Image (cartoon, rainbow, N blue to C red; front, side, top):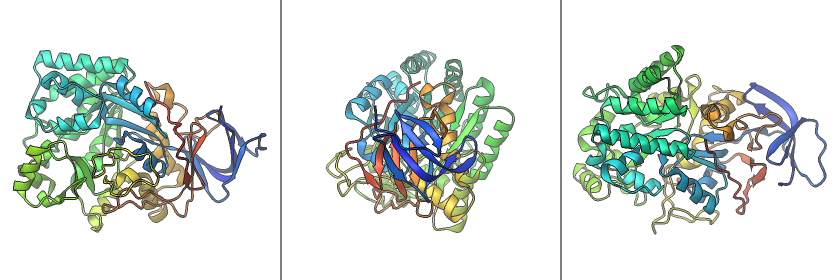
Length: 489
């Protein structure tokens, strides 16, 4: 039983109804208990939030942080539920157990890892429910190759077992095996449809960038959705589409108009992050991205790759090493407009693709707060959601507050709501909804993380409640709060 919390005088946003009202919010036992003019119950914590915006906490469908440190940065970005769905972890039972044992300030969950299942079947790699092992195999030629019928059957059986253990769908890193037979992707989509779980795809290369691709990456998602009836989520459309995003978004919208269950996400940055051994970072492929080796910066060391020879060395020596790839110039008005159009697209959701924090001594987590100096990551880990709000609400006026919460909270929850009881109360603010709430200063919300200082927390979250507990109060983090719960299908 948690102490009741009463938020008084705020502007309450319910994105499900598209409403903005002035009323109090009473939270009790992990739920929104009352709305309106509410008298404070005995013993309640009462917070005056006059002039502030109260809404459902953000649901991040694409977070790889898997750590207390990373989740605390996301808490200051307004996130209350952080899910790894694009890559997933394997075995998910172990991932859930270890997260529960370690404690998490935010809710957490995982998809079944298609990449991990292939690694076990094709390479004999024993899965250990870590992102590092998953990244480490992506550059392996043996992992990138096609499957025999027996191997495909074994991979699908392993994924089906993971779904039985509560995985939130199937995460498919198809962009890391770009020559794969499209029939394998269709087979995975058919499994997802039969299990009634979504897929979350990092698509293969677009035809504009690689005319020899077996199939255009975004067309492949559309085809699979139409042929199988599966719910297909297109991950980080900004980074996989780059300067072709208008065509891709039109393709996805056409599919939705025809009745397919296709959803899409974006993040507001012109640089991505991945393992340096990724297939699309082969030196010969960089021209398709309109970049060169010097557009790649290694996380941890800060090394900017000087030339093709050095890139080949890094790919050979440590293919799983994380790096940042600069694919758009955020200071260029035309490139900045491309980023905005990804976010402006109807029903596009915000998702971070948040990365772990890496320290020079090899540490991947810390319970110190503020975080120890020297941590490296992509700034999207700390700043995605409040950067999107700064751009789209404060500066551009493209989103109202109900629309902002719809894209950051309600729509992401709806991706999972059909198959996952644990999210049906999230993403909305009504009596009976989950008490995962964020209280924002509407005139101040902004990101502060930069590529040079990527662990600087965002600013503007005054209070954050997870399962009815105050993780952030008056801008201060409760370092004893480990109130995150598993989100499991």
